Amino acid sequence: MGLFEFLHIAIIALYGLGTVLFLTGLGTSNDRLKKVAVWLAAAGFALNTVDLVLVIAREPGALSAGKFYFNILAWCVLAVYFYLWWRLRLEFLAITALPLALLLFVSSMAMGGIRVIMPPELTALFFGLHIATLILTMGVLIMAFGAGLAFLHYNRKLKTKAGLASMGKDVPSLDKFDRVNRWAILVGFPLFTLGLFSTFFWYWIAPGKQFAWDVMKIGSLAVWFLFAFLFHQRLVLGWRGRKPAVLTIWVFAGMCISLIHHTITFRSMP
Image (cartoon, rainbow, N blue to C red; front, top):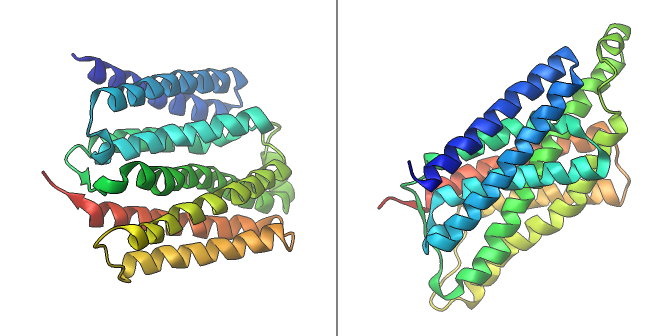
């Protein structure tokens, strides 16, 4: 068994065990299990970091491999989660971060035959401004998606006495979920704007590259307008609570559809 195979098995095992323990701890109100789950996730995150560094250092064509982007997206989800855990002590969002990190990392194993065509004259610029910012946006929106679902679920429970009694003492306040939403919109929209419009800039300066509207570009622009509306309503007009939570879920859904379409459109089989 090679080094990469060992790392991949260890990462999947740590993410998988962390997911099971956290869900079990949440269901049984066992704080110890949840803490162990978070530490397992941290260990998996550390190994995932080592894996990414080795891939970039040892494989010259790493940036053109489809599996690399799912791998780094899994890493990004946990990076955002640990940041929020540090800032807000919001351990609860592991219910979103751990299963999705596991799913994305396992998915990266199935992407070995997919190649991403990179512009040779602007590889660093294109990767830094377009792909990296969109990956960060997805990581941020995944956490906002989890916080939005949690806000809607527990807000509905608060309206009934039976639901209030069943919430338990470990559920964070709705204000924390709303703060995640605000932070995600504040950070995510500028990143998405930079990532999206860097593509148009590339078409403008790339020699012999002609810009043409297609379903992918129109769909991405539609998501941007929806995100811009959410950004304005949240930060300018002071939206809070249910409305931004619902709209963030729609923005996330649009981003997922765009990601799937990009994967299908730009893949080239060797």
